[in-house]
Image 1: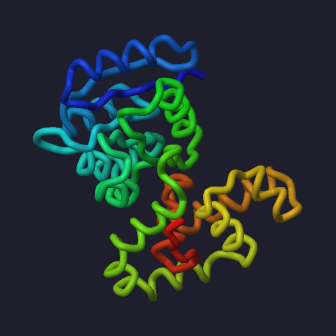
Image 2: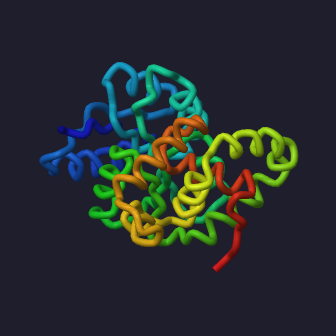
Length: 228
């Protein structure tokens, strides 16, 4: 199946470079380009995009607002957003994940990293770029979510209570950045069993993908942040 990619960036030169790169791959194609967030949302719907490469800073409707719109639209449930940042470590990381993005990638990433990011996002996996360590992401989530954790602690507790002990265990390992294969090895179960637990946790928590599971795990206090 060909991955349908939408490019959203206000810089035409960057969009052209991304288009050449994406269209060079046999398993993906650029279906449209947008110069701002509002256009990106409309094109995601009309062009049935699978993955949106979304610049954060754009005039008018920015990438964060556009990502929230996509995440909130049931018709766009299958659309995965990868946020593109000038700097991989900035205040937008948390906002990107909370807005519903599957992950983020620095604009200075190597071409193979960008292509891999598209494939990971299309598969519904959580994307954390190589320079974004698990500890750093956890720290950002904690700093950005302190107030939300206090206000929503009861709601988080209720949602956690809906998970089985094993599902909570798997959720914690997902938040730690472990793959299904790694979790399976650690728990001495099959990768298929892990996938089942992940899917059930996503359904119970209303998470679009693994990135949203990571956000919930930290915001609920199931996993505590630490800086490595």
